[in-house]
Image (cartoon, rainbow, N blue to C red; front, top):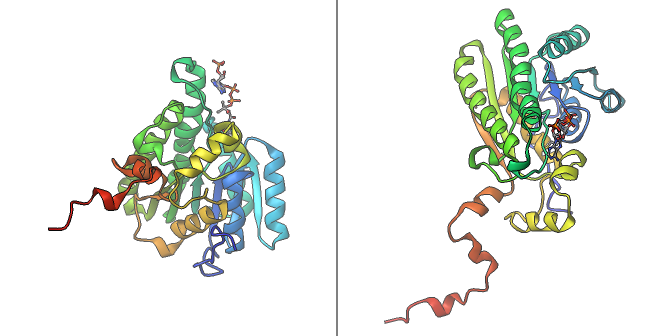
Length: 286
Ligand code: COA
């Protein structure tokens, strides 16, 4: 059994009675959360730019006995976001969970970025998260619906990172949004939390961010867990955080990276890679 195999700690009907809107839900991590939330009893509302993966994921959820609907929209366009949210509510009934998963990213030296390149990523990640959050939050406040928002950020939201400047800036903004709204909207019964994943192999992310197998190996080597994460593990944590079981967790960003970012941060952590003769370094016993 691989160490990535997990046993679920969740009740099989944990999300029954809830409806979850997952942006970027047709592929990758979004699809993983959509399928898992569906299996845990939630109705699933999917959105994304391309119809084909959304239709395929919705069908997979229905084939597994769940209920799902989808609507295409680019999260950068606030009118399209509102239209998609209304259409999804029309089909499935009131939505009470939002997962801001849609993202855009690419590797580039920062001095080679164009304003449009910077704006595209920030538009998807920061503005897009705001547009979806606003659509859901306004509705929930107006109707007195308690809701849960989960933002997928990244571990470099607080450290920054070379070569992904637009994403780092945008995710840092989403982190601030998470904490700000957890306080401001708490009195409406709206919870806002986040997950900061380290590397989890998906076609969308790895084709852009790990262009070379050697790079993949280097990344893996610095993860204390000794492996990448899986989208199934992410979906377990996400399901818990959006569920009523996590009612008292507010404004929290859960680091989910096998220990990777701390590995890079600790002053002496690189000693792990060296063959240190520890016994010889001790002072002789008196
Ligand atoms: N390096 C530098 N600039 C880049 C780039 C790269 N690898 N990829 C795109 N850009 C620039 C483009 O040149 C363009 O700027 P310009 O008009 O000044 O030339 C700008 O970004 C927009 O590109 P475009 O392809 O028109 O945008 P889009 O809206 O279709 O796509 C992206 C948005 C760029 C974020 C694209 O990578 C995408 O669709 N990503 C979604 C999926 C994803 O990133 N998943 C991984 C999440 S971790």
